Picture 1 (cartoon, rainbow, N blue to C red):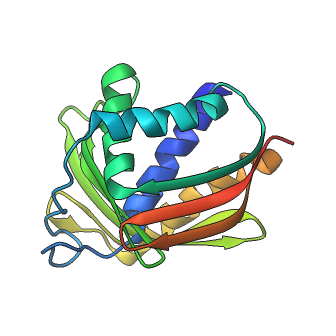
Picture 2 (cartoon, one colour):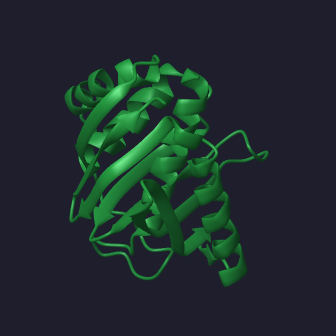
Length: 184
Protein backbone atom coordinates (compact mmCIF):
# COMPACT_ATOMS: atom_id res chain seq x y z
CA UNK A 1 0.00 0.00 0.00
CA UNK A 2 2.88 2.36 0.83
CA UNK A 3 4.43 1.83 -2.60
CA UNK A 4 1.09 2.49 -4.32
CA UNK A 5 0.54 5.67 -2.31
CA UNK A 6 4.11 6.77 -3.08
CA UNK A 7 3.46 6.31 -6.80
CA UNK A 8 0.18 8.19 -6.41
CA UNK A 9 2.05 11.01 -4.68
CA UNK A 10 4.60 10.98 -7.51
CA UNK A 11 1.81 11.09 -10.08
CA UNK A 12 0.11 13.90 -8.18
CA UNK A 13 3.34 15.86 -8.12
CA UNK A 14 3.82 15.23 -11.81
CA UNK A 15 0.28 16.35 -12.46
CA UNK A 16 0.87 19.38 -10.31
CA UNK A 17 3.92 20.22 -12.31
CA UNK A 18 2.02 19.76 -15.54
CA UNK A 19 -1.00 21.81 -14.58
CA UNK A 20 0.39 25.31 -14.61
CA UNK A 21 1.69 27.67 -17.20
CA UNK A 22 5.33 28.63 -16.68
CA UNK A 23 6.25 31.50 -14.43
CA UNK A 24 9.45 33.20 -13.44
CA UNK A 25 10.71 34.11 -16.88
CA UNK A 26 9.61 30.94 -18.63
CA UNK A 27 8.34 31.35 -22.15
CA UNK A 28 5.98 28.80 -23.64
CA UNK A 29 5.61 25.19 -22.60
CA UNK A 30 9.34 24.53 -22.66
CA UNK A 31 10.56 27.57 -20.77
CA UNK A 32 13.05 27.62 -17.96
CA UNK A 33 11.46 26.66 -14.63
CA UNK A 34 11.82 29.04 -11.69
CA UNK A 35 14.81 28.62 -9.40
CA UNK A 36 13.51 27.07 -6.20
CA UNK A 37 16.19 26.57 -3.54
CA UNK A 38 16.45 23.26 -1.73
CA UNK A 39 15.70 23.28 1.98
CA UNK A 40 16.34 20.12 3.94
CA UNK A 41 14.41 21.60 6.87
CA UNK A 42 11.30 22.13 4.72
CA UNK A 43 11.70 18.69 3.10
CA UNK A 44 11.90 17.00 6.49
CA UNK A 45 8.90 18.98 7.73
CA UNK A 46 6.73 17.82 4.82
CA UNK A 47 8.11 14.29 5.10
CA UNK A 48 7.14 14.21 8.76
CA UNK A 49 3.58 15.23 7.88
CA UNK A 50 3.30 12.69 5.02
CA UNK A 51 5.01 9.67 6.60
CA UNK A 52 2.07 8.55 8.75
CA UNK A 53 -0.10 8.31 5.62
CA UNK A 54 2.64 6.69 3.55
CA UNK A 55 2.87 4.08 6.31
CA UNK A 56 -0.85 3.30 6.20
CA UNK A 57 -2.49 5.74 8.63
CA UNK A 58 -6.07 6.47 7.68
CA UNK A 59 -8.41 9.29 8.58
CA UNK A 60 -8.88 12.95 7.83
CA UNK A 61 -5.97 15.03 6.59
CA UNK A 62 -5.13 18.62 5.81
CA UNK A 63 -2.14 19.29 3.59
CA UNK A 64 -0.73 22.73 3.05
CA UNK A 65 2.54 23.06 1.19
CA UNK A 66 4.59 25.53 -0.80
CA UNK A 67 6.50 25.11 -4.03
CA UNK A 68 9.79 25.19 -2.12
CA UNK A 69 8.64 22.61 0.41
CA UNK A 70 7.30 20.20 -2.22
CA UNK A 71 10.29 20.62 -4.54
CA UNK A 72 12.64 20.02 -1.59
CA UNK A 73 10.64 16.95 -0.51
CA UNK A 74 10.91 15.39 -3.97
CA UNK A 75 14.71 15.83 -3.96
CA UNK A 76 14.91 14.59 -0.36
CA UNK A 77 12.77 11.53 -1.16
CA UNK A 78 14.65 10.74 -4.37
CA UNK A 79 17.93 10.75 -2.42
CA UNK A 80 16.48 8.38 0.22
CA UNK A 81 14.56 5.99 -2.05
CA UNK A 82 16.37 4.69 -5.10
CA UNK A 83 13.09 3.74 -6.81
CA UNK A 84 12.05 7.31 -7.61
CA UNK A 85 13.03 7.95 -11.26
CA UNK A 86 13.22 11.75 -11.02
CA UNK A 87 16.21 14.08 -10.89
CA UNK A 88 16.39 17.88 -10.63
CA UNK A 89 12.63 18.19 -10.10
CA UNK A 90 10.99 21.57 -9.64
CA UNK A 91 7.31 21.97 -8.77
CA UNK A 92 5.57 25.32 -8.71
CA UNK A 93 2.01 26.50 -8.41
CA UNK A 94 -0.15 29.20 -9.92
CA UNK A 95 -3.91 29.80 -9.84
CA UNK A 96 -5.56 26.35 -10.25
CA UNK A 97 -2.42 24.97 -11.85
CA UNK A 98 0.52 22.79 -10.97
CA UNK A 99 3.78 22.90 -12.90
CA UNK A 100 6.54 20.31 -13.02
CA UNK A 101 9.98 20.22 -14.56
CA UNK A 102 12.52 17.48 -14.08
CA UNK A 103 14.62 14.75 -15.62
CA UNK A 104 12.97 11.34 -15.78
CA UNK A 105 15.67 8.71 -15.24
CA UNK A 106 15.81 4.93 -15.70
CA UNK A 107 12.93 4.96 -18.17
CA UNK A 108 15.09 5.31 -21.29
CA UNK A 109 18.82 4.85 -21.76
CA UNK A 110 19.46 8.53 -21.00
CA UNK A 111 17.58 10.90 -18.68
CA UNK A 112 14.81 12.86 -20.42
CA UNK A 113 13.90 16.40 -19.36
CA UNK A 114 10.14 16.81 -19.06
CA UNK A 115 8.06 19.87 -18.30
CA UNK A 116 4.32 19.72 -17.67
CA UNK A 117 1.75 22.40 -16.96
CA UNK A 118 -1.68 21.21 -15.81
CA UNK A 119 -4.94 22.59 -14.52
CA UNK A 120 -6.25 20.72 -11.48
CA UNK A 121 -9.69 20.69 -9.86
CA UNK A 122 -12.04 18.47 -7.90
CA UNK A 123 -15.03 16.55 -9.20
CA UNK A 124 -16.92 14.30 -6.77
CA UNK A 125 -14.01 14.33 -4.27
CA UNK A 126 -11.59 13.14 -6.95
CA UNK A 127 -8.67 15.09 -8.36
CA UNK A 128 -9.06 15.89 -12.05
CA UNK A 129 -6.11 16.84 -14.23
CA UNK A 130 -5.96 18.51 -17.61
CA UNK A 131 -2.50 18.77 -19.14
CA UNK A 132 -2.43 22.13 -20.89
CA UNK A 133 1.21 22.20 -21.98
CA UNK A 134 3.93 19.57 -21.98
CA UNK A 135 7.29 19.08 -23.57
CA UNK A 136 10.10 16.58 -23.72
CA UNK A 137 13.41 18.31 -24.05
CA UNK A 138 12.55 21.51 -25.94
CA UNK A 139 9.86 19.84 -28.06
CA UNK A 140 6.23 20.66 -27.26
CA UNK A 141 3.95 17.63 -27.30
CA UNK A 142 0.86 17.56 -29.55
CA UNK A 143 -2.67 17.92 -28.19
CA UNK A 144 -3.46 14.19 -28.50
CA UNK A 145 -0.49 13.30 -26.27
CA UNK A 146 -1.56 15.91 -23.68
CA UNK A 147 -5.13 14.55 -23.77
CA UNK A 148 -3.84 10.99 -23.35
CA UNK A 149 -1.64 12.07 -20.42
CA UNK A 150 -4.61 13.83 -18.80
CA UNK A 151 -6.74 10.67 -19.08
CA UNK A 152 -4.00 8.36 -17.81
CA UNK A 153 -3.27 10.57 -14.79
CA UNK A 154 -6.94 11.01 -13.92
CA UNK A 155 -7.69 7.28 -14.34
CA UNK A 156 -4.67 6.35 -12.22
CA UNK A 157 -5.99 8.59 -9.47
CA UNK A 158 -9.45 7.03 -9.85
CA UNK A 159 -7.87 3.57 -9.46
CA UNK A 160 -7.20 4.40 -5.81
CA UNK A 161 -10.95 3.96 -5.46
CA UNK A 162 -12.37 5.23 -2.21
CA UNK A 163 -8.95 5.17 -0.54
CA UNK A 164 -8.12 8.87 -1.10
CA UNK A 165 -10.96 11.40 -1.18
CA UNK A 166 -10.33 15.12 -1.47
CA UNK A 167 -12.95 17.43 0.02
CA UNK A 168 -11.20 20.67 -0.84
CA UNK A 169 -8.38 21.77 -3.09
CA UNK A 170 -6.94 25.24 -3.48
CA UNK A 171 -3.96 25.94 -5.70
CA UNK A 172 -2.65 29.49 -5.84
CA UNK A 173 0.55 31.39 -6.52
CA UNK A 174 3.21 29.41 -4.67
CA UNK A 175 0.97 27.17 -2.53
CA UNK A 176 -1.33 24.16 -2.49
CA UNK A 177 -3.93 23.36 0.17
CA UNK A 178 -5.92 20.12 0.20
CA UNK A 179 -8.08 18.35 2.74
CA UNK A 180 -9.97 15.11 2.76
CA UNK A 181 -9.75 11.59 4.06
CA UNK A 182 -7.59 8.56 3.51
CA UNK A 183 -9.02 5.11 3.99
CA UNK A 184 -12.33 3.47 3.32
